[in-house]
Length: 81
Image (cartoon, rainbow, N blue to C red; front, side, top):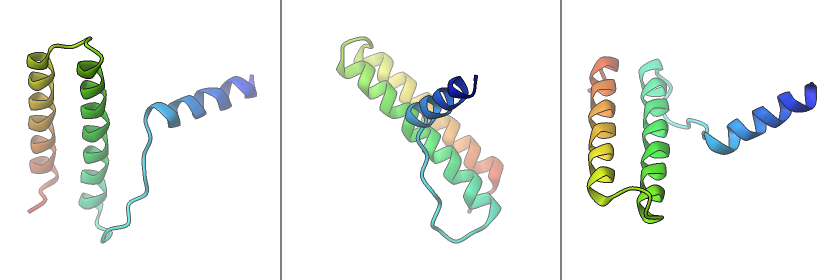
């Protein structure tokens, strides 16, 4: 069972990579960095789906635009100037 747990942890790290935050430490900066990394990961998935022909360019544009709006909303909620 421990082996399954390690496999799932490794799989999660592979599918959802994250990097350390090296900027000035403020809780709001750290929270925004987390949102920014998630945004970039999702945009990467959308781009790959569009490149492989599984998503139309219009759908890809719409999804990326939605993700951008979510990032802007997160920034406003975190109150970063």
